Structure formats: C-alpha cells, structure tokens
Image 1 (tube, rainbow, N blue to C red):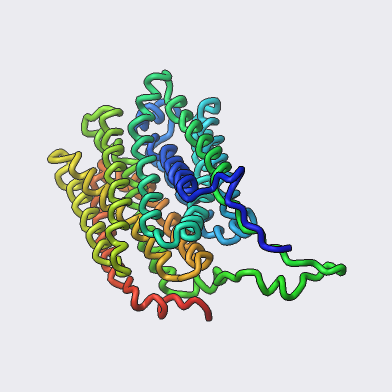
Image 2: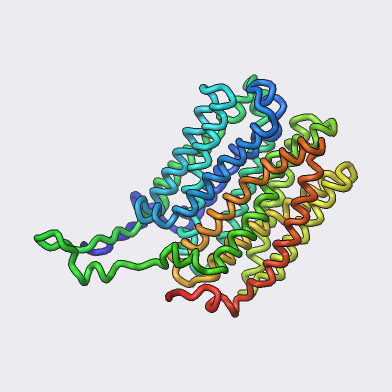
Length: 418
C-alpha cells in the first residue's frame, strides 16, 4: 500500500494550527505538578502524608516520564506521534478529573502517576512532530514549546490555590486542570497531521514484498545509541539540571511557608519562577539559532541557575522574587537549549527524536530523585537550604559537561550509522 499522509481532519492542518496544538499540549504538562506545592500544608493535613510521602507526587511522575521517554521510539512506532499526543492529553485529563472524586494520599499519588504517564507520552512525541513539521524553524518552535511547558507550570502554581479557595477544597483546585487537557485533546485531534502509514505490500502467502519492505525508513537502534558515551553525557546533564526544577516545584513554596509566607504568596513565587522559565525557554533558543554552537547560551543559563540557588540557600529573605526569576530563567533556558542540542546531534527526525527521548528518559529518571533527596536533607538539617546548596554544586558539574557540546564534533560523537 502506498504511503499516505493526511494533513489533518477536514483540511484543518495548516502549520499555524499545528503550532497552536503543540503549544496547548505543552501548557497541560506541568499544572498537575506545580499546583501541589502551594497546597502542601493543606494536603499534608488532609492526607497524612509527610514530606517524603509528598515527594512521591513529584518523584513518581518524573520517573514515569523518564521510563516513557526511554520507550518513546517503540511507542511512536506502535501508536504514531499524533495518537501518542491524543493519548497523553486524555490521560492528563482523566488523572486530573479523578482528583475531584477520589480522596486520600494513595489516590493522589496514583493520579500523579496517571498524569505522569500522559506527560511521558506527550514529551516523547512532540519534539519529533516539531522537527518534522518545522525543520527550518526547529530551534524557535522548540523554544515556544518549552515556553508553553513553563507557562503551564506558572498557571498551575498561581491558579490552583485560588481555585481551591473558590471551590472550597484542594481537590477542586487540582481537578480543574482536566478542562484545558480535554480542550487540548480536541484541538490536537482536529489539527495535528496524521501519522504516515507505511505498510508493505503483502503477497498471497503473507510474505511482505521486498521492495516495499526496503522502502520503510530505519532508525538508529536504541541499544546502539546507548552504546555511545555522548548519549549518557546528555542524559546525566539533562537529569541533574532538571533535578533543580523538580526540587523547586516540590519545595520552594514549602521553604517559604516555613519562613512565614502564606500558601498563595509562596505559590506566587513558583508562578513567577515559571514565567521567567517560559520567557527564557522561548528567548534563549531563538537567540542561539544564529549559530550552531549553543554552548555560550547554555553557560549563561547555567550561571543564572547558580545565582538563583546561591541566593535561595544563603540569602533567602534578601530578594526572594529575584532568586525565583533568575533561577527560573536559567532553568527554562537550559531545558529548551538541551532539547535543541539533542536534536542538533543527528540530521534525521527519527534518529534525533530517539536521541532526545533517551536524553529525557534517563534525565527524568535522575531528576525524579531530587525532590526525595531534598526531603531527606530537610529531615536531616531542618531546612531546604541544604538542598539548594546541593543543586548549586550540581550546576557546576553540568557547566563542565557543557563544554563538550562542540557542533564540529557531533558527527564523531554521534555518527548516523555504524
């Protein structure tokens, strides 16, 4: 059967609509995480979860995102990129809605896992869609997608406690995020291009036609990618860097609540941090697109993170908003630049997406441990300041790794074949 690619339902598949669907999908992948921190005292009192138990609300989704990203190539072959995004948004919508009717700490962790599975599917598929649909503007669109992720985090942190107050319970504040998830599902269903269907012609005896089988695209095997040191360097750098984000969305609000801040005010810090992330996630890749060498911009983003963590650890009351903005800008810029750097390494969308998925997979497995480690450090020291010092040291390590990402050596580090 011939390859058949449709641009979408009822002719709605223009790049602008596809871009809108990508952005709205990204907006839905963080509110279920960032809405927890501002409500932490209320949730702890209601469910009986301690700090280590609350850490599972961030740890488990991050781990599932990592596992899902590792399985992304197989998932894309099985589901296709468009169907993976549709499944993702459906899972986030169902998981968010269940938080309204299914109380208790165990239920909250289970719904976090469901939303994490959805986020894993979306983050595995969306970069491949971006590289395929916008090859000439890949860095800019990846920046926009990353900005949407961070903006969704800001909305979750700011609106969740406000909606919880209006609805009379924290369940309502968390469950409301089912609405944009289902709106995103509808837009993606109407506008994202259909996946290419490549099916070999079959002879009467059931054997695929050799010519048709040979026409199917091949992707670098995952095991071959895992055999390359550059893959592991990308994983480790991405994971250590995102561990800082995971700890901040889990514990920044709690850190300032222990210093006398209210829930909404501490949630506002996460929102401000997320807005700064969104701006930097959009701006830095756009600026970095002028040159194939992204290292100077990565160094800038990491320096901003270092300032933010140092301020939170050493002088938390001096300028809380400044630390949130500076650190958030560094995290957002670094996140989107790392996605671009991974895609830069390989020319074919399928290969680049596989490498990006592995980077995110191993990276999020590593990042998911950070909130739990922060909780352990808090129990040992009585403050989250120790966690911020740890993340400052981690930033220094990532800075050293960043010097290796010279585009002139990408072919040697990650050959397309063999």
